[in-house]
Image 1 (cartoon, rainbow, N blue to C red):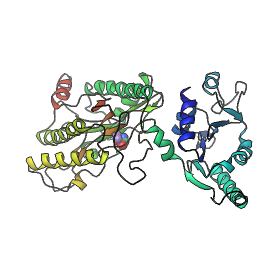
Image 2 (cartoon, rainbow, N blue to C red):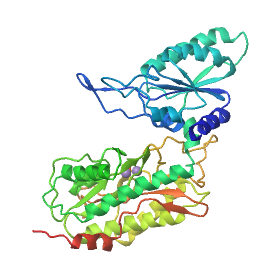
Image 3 (cartoon, helix red, strand yellow):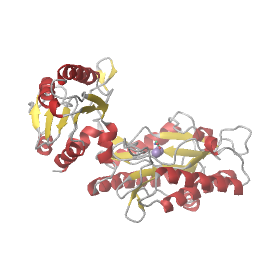
Image 4 (cartoon, helix red, strand yellow):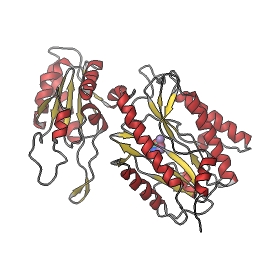
Length: 417
Ligand code: GLY
Ligand code: MN
Ligand code: MN
């Protein structure tokens, strides 16, 4: 019923908007082999199945599932398009049709709608088909209404439903965060001397898979030494050196839901004095933001809190610099089925969305010293956790160690040469 309810909510919240949501197409990776297929999250949210080249139409109370592989016998070569029997169990209160029926379905329904919403740019074929359909509809539409049929992007509209997570979604997010956190605990106890950034990424990714996760939530980020000041450093062959820190931003996806966690740890057993100073400033700012989260706050006000405590910490340590340069990113983003969930950050009046129970987002202040003249040059620290808003505050979903003492204790057990 979950998916039927979501489609019905979408249809009733936007009763004048007809939605067409493609599951996504296979993209070629090399001459004759495609990339691994990742279903579009809005499609998965609304019908629960992971097949390529299918289209969902939500027209008020009526929904259609369009695919050319419905009830296909077991496929000989590829089955990424084919519905499995467990998929069919999820698809009820929905009418099945071939993809070629899309134009007919639209023509049957569009008279009753003012807008046609779809994720613009996901499928060239769909972009073209819907544009043709709007052009066709508007040529004859003036006979029965003065309102032209409009095309719009569906992402933030579906995003409005996805803003507040349902209880079972929170369970899945908690699992994604806990499984990912467990992998960090393993990492803290690993000897990293002589390892490359790629070795670290390989370790994390294989552990995520051993935890039963099928995907990483995003490309694993590993920045060692001064590469920790690149916000999204790709793991390279660079060897981790004693005395450096390594910034790791990595997490897995559990049953369609993402975690997003960043930790910084010493390559050896302990942080240097300068590394520790910066780390403690960021940690304090992160904890102050976490304390402030409750319904009614906004992500903008949390960002101000982060900046305020970072500035205070820098001042106390006698460190100067522009906060917009030292922390050039936001403190938070929505998270859910996408690591950057597509819900809007402002409401229809342009005001920042007020937090309410069930909304989930990251808290990830950071400081990055990229100025070569600074005594702190090359230090990059970001500490990132995932939270869900509760009635009085928040639940922190991720639990990887972040206190200096805890991390140093874990690392002190290493047998280093
Ligand atoms: N891992 C990407 C981000 O923190 O937004
Ligand atoms: Mn993030
Ligand atoms: Mn991250």
